[in-house]
Every structure is written in C-alpha cells, then in structure tokens.
Length: 339
Image (cartoon, rainbow, N blue to C red; front, side):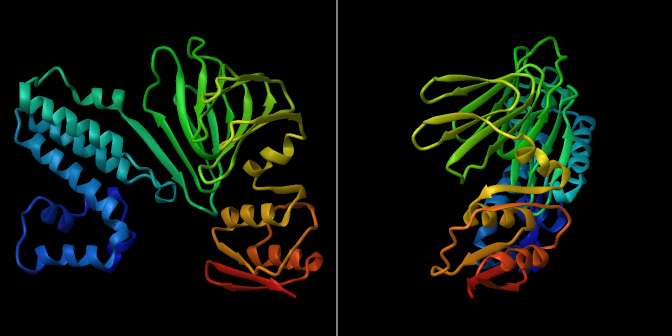
C-alpha cells in the first residue's frame, strides 16, 4: 500500500483497486485496507476524497441515459490527461467536477443531447503545478507563451470567454502575450488581490501566496496593474516594476534592470544587493530543499551574483566563501550554522 502515499487524485482515479473500493465493489481484506491506509497517511485524504467524488460521478453517469459511446469518450479523455508528463502534475479536478455536474443534470432531466461531451472542455479549467526545483514552459491556445518557475501553481481555462483571457497565478511566471484573439485583454489574477491587464506584452509576475508582496516587472509593451482591494490602478512602461504589500495594499513603483527578475526562465539565478534571507528563500525553491538557519547566524551582507549550472553543494560552498557559515546536507534538508 505504500506506493499509494505518492499518488495524486489522477493516480487514484486510474487505479483499479482503488476504484473497486471507492464504488463498493470489493469486500473482505480488500475493503479494509483503504481505511487503514488513511489512518497511516491522513495527508492523502484530500486526494482520496476528490477521487471518490470523481468516480461516483462517473458511476451516476453510467446509470443514466447517456450512451456508452459518450462515457467511453469521457474516460478516454481522462486517461489521456492522466498520462501527461508527471513532473507538471496536471490536475483536472474542475474537469471532473464538470463531468459530474453534467451526469446529475442528465439523470435529473434526461437532457441526453443538450450536454455533449465536447461542452465539458468549454467550462473546464486546467491546473498545472511545477514542483520545487523544476521550471516549465507552456503555450496557451491563443499563442501566449508562459514560463513557470519552481513551486508555481497556474490555472487557465480550456477556452477563454468572449470578453477576456483570464488566468490565475500562485507563484512566478513570465508571459509573452500575443495580441491576436480579437483584442481581448489578457488578465493575470493573483492571490494578493492584484490583477495585471495587458493586450500584448512581455512581463514577469511574482505572486507566491506565502510571500508578503506581489511584484510585476515589465520588459516590453504596457500593462495595467489593478489593486482589487483599494481599486487603485498603475500603468507600467518597459523597465518599470510594481511591488504591492499584500497585507497593507500599499504599492511602490520603480525602474529596474528587468534581467534581474526574468533571467530565471533561462535557468539563471541572479541576485543584486540581495539579503541572506532572500538568497535562502530562492535556493529553497530552486533546489527543492528545506533550509534551516541557526538563530545566532546574523548576516548583514548583501549578495550580488549570477548562478547558472551550480549544484546545491556548489552554491552552498560559494556562499560559505563570503559568509561565516557551515552547512550540512541530509537529502532534501539543509542546516546552516555559524562558523
């Protein structure tokens, strides 16, 4: 059962043993192993609950007047999505939820032809999560290119609405937005209640939910940043950066060297007058590690450097040359102490 500790919602949905248990189709020891698994791995409850929701929705669908051909097409679509590259952890829970709702509607009103399989794609959205230590690049169907940094969650519709192209970002991404698509504005929504509106431009947004600031950096074109709390707006021109404090809503705008904030998509990690805390935070995401710093290590030095292909150990060695520190690496844990 331990293999299931690494399963995602997609994995549970596609697993035959899990499906049999979720739909009440096994008995004896097989039916008892899953409650035991949940006791040992309570952190998997959310994925299991979602998977059960999905499977029960399909079960309801199969009992309605929907044709077997429709059901086969839906399952084929789910299998195709679940087979996507694992490192991106594509999650299609909203797609599943839409299918489940359609199943209920078919069962209640018998609208066998109104809700076609194709309509699921119209209302669904896709969510991509890029794990710590990885980066990725995707192209949206309107031609917009998006580079996603480590630890980023990115949600986008399978088709944009008639009036806008809106996506949701929790993390960091660089956008090269196409101007086509009948002039629809491209809108980036963030956890910090800031919307970035553009028509066609190149810009970077740093908006991790756990960070205190949302930062937008414009490389080319023009963008409008909208604070949804204070309703203030700010126009950015090339070379401008806007940073907003999520807790207070206060924002600052300044001119910057945009390469410092966009070079990550070229696998370059750049720092200019960065604090030790900033360096450590970026290292955690970049190398997918947890770093613990001893309390008595008080570093006031500011760091300016460019990191390209260095490993975690090489990066720590580089820091130790100019910082009074020792370090220990234990798998994905790093402990930094005073030297």
